[in-house]
Length: 424
Image (cartoon, rainbow, N blue to C red; front, side, top):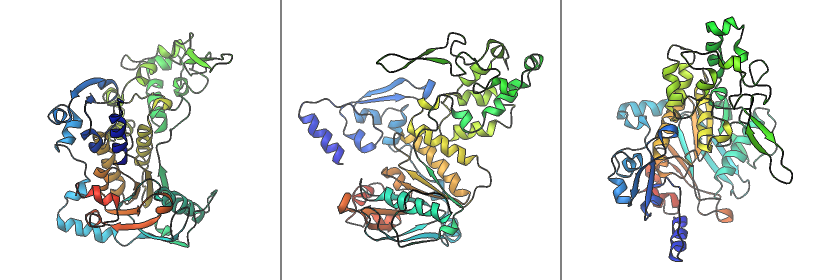
């Protein structure tokens, strides 16, 4: 709300403001909306609509329009269970919880907080209200010490009960999955081995006595040795930043000529790494060991990414969902508490719907999810809300509310309440 008022003041002073935004409230105040799509990646890049907000609401092809007019909604599927099944679900999950007593790190004011397990718990509050301090400095760092792991600093707290109920706490944030172009979606989820094995089993590969390692651009064998499999050559510039140019030996493909001559269904390894996940699911339909891993990426809305897309080109939201995909691929994972820090930042409502489905899968396996979030569409889906405030900094750090979203709308001191009541 404060940001909208600031932008309005800038506009009054004769300035022109261009904003990339997904929030309904922000979009509703726009004088001109430009909607791109229809999907992401190669299926995107088209202007679907340009005009007023009301016109966008009537634009049938636009995913943004569908969410604005209520045709599409964000929800957790279990909210549509029968009343009887809801009661059964509560009985199974109400028994275990983590209780934080006397959290006093930074601006937290001796806060006592209950975090129910096997639920979707959302931590809300204005910036600086103490959300990150509570989850990371207090809960996460003290859990590390509880498990005997190294930790730099502990958030001040009197005691924490119930840590023995969780097998592990996993932090999934929007930091990059790798600092070099050598990391990509298929290497991150350990799917590259299966792809290389497919090429190693071809008749052409066997005749050349090539093995799986020859189809890796990270090790000696089949990679281009001029660029060491990076596809680019670094050129050092005096008094200027280094620049990278395409390797002339492999023309950016990363591989030796003889490796690129090996094909599967008419495609070589370089062609495959440039396929989207959606296309690869069709291309490798007979490779049963690979399909579940690729399907997970499609299920969380990343089907438009290329298999070999460098990690350095991925957005924070894409990196976070890849981390989530890796967790979904872990077998037998139960009683894990997943921490998310504003996972919807940079995501369109259509992307958020995929994220919520993935969170649902984590919960169905007997895990717990706690997230810091400002998006009201997500907050309304919470099983339990922890609201901190009332302000930020020294004026924050108090527990304003904890409980069901429907009851938060009665809490007058909560800023979250003022906006959430229009969504419940």
